[in-house]
Length: 493
Image (cartoon, rainbow, N blue to C red; front, side):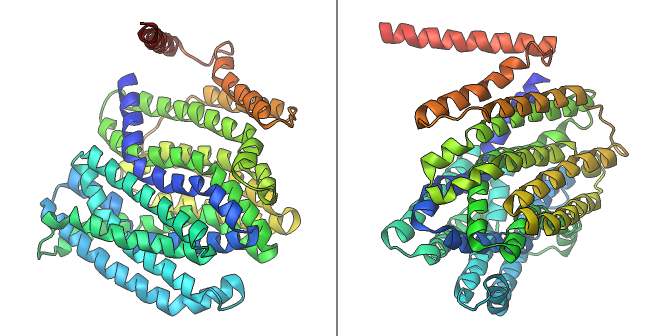
């Protein structure tokens, strides 16, 4: 059991690196955004960035998971046929994305910004999305072949390149919002050739319509769910932009950038989870494994959410300017939303095992409808806090529906009592942190950090840990202490 949990953690770190670094660059660039862009300007970039995300989802056709399933589960075609078919399909999709950008850019600029001022930038975001489409096949291949080092190296190179280009275009060339869009486009152009190089030996002049049908039969039903999942994250920005001011959109978006740390963990888990989920499905320990994963997800997710929530004000003081300090209020509900989102992936088991992917669309669709409805009611009255509340409630609905649906195909007895205990302890400690108001930044960060670290310790006397977990924790503590002593002895020698 613990070995499989360990393997899940290892896979989450390695293959989640690409998604994590893509999110991490947005977090690392928070000082750049806050010092060189006003909240109103940052709102413009945020809306452009989120629009590009939607375009990319459509362009990629959901083929990443379909390639993985076809290569490791269906095994109906050789790899060259599989990769070539997928690649040429994405070529056509990317060309359609470029054409759509050219046709819709002016209309979208008027819709989002009430002017044609940003038409060029919108078209460039579509062009960027079209180029990023080509990441799918080569990176899926590296995962399938277990080439973790190469996968990580490409991911890190992409992270570094984007970071440096953003700093160059904004801080040195003073290009503002346009500089951010242009930097992202240049990075996509450069890495298009990197991705092409890593798939060149698998491309052939062959195209299998049978393989395409298998790929699309799995992937197309997931596109509405992928769009809906992204809309769950970004729709509030559009509604907030309509009812409130660009400055409030910018402040709200800055809060989301800080909360991205939690989303990084969820993305890593999301990438690693399918491999182990499918691999243990036929084993005797499957139900217990699935149950424990959800419990540990809440344990770790709530620790991360608590840390970000209690340190929200300190993080903003360190990385941003006073214009963005108001974002601290929305960080706690947003990071909790990400915990619920991770729980949704961990509980959506039965529908995936039985290939009932249409349930995913229904779950996401209902949650999105609830969120949009709540946003329309709450945002005009309470602004960005209403948007944050709508987000956490709609995300809570997702794992609830996933459990109710999945039990029809694969019943799992989850440890609801233990999960509730982690939520209650985290909420209580967050309440304590609200009573702490310290002007000195370093002392404030220290005290708030210590409050978060109390969380795993407080769970011990409250009976959260089971005997096997206590033994494992004691073993890990012993190993950790041995390493510390060894390090001390080496320094002394």
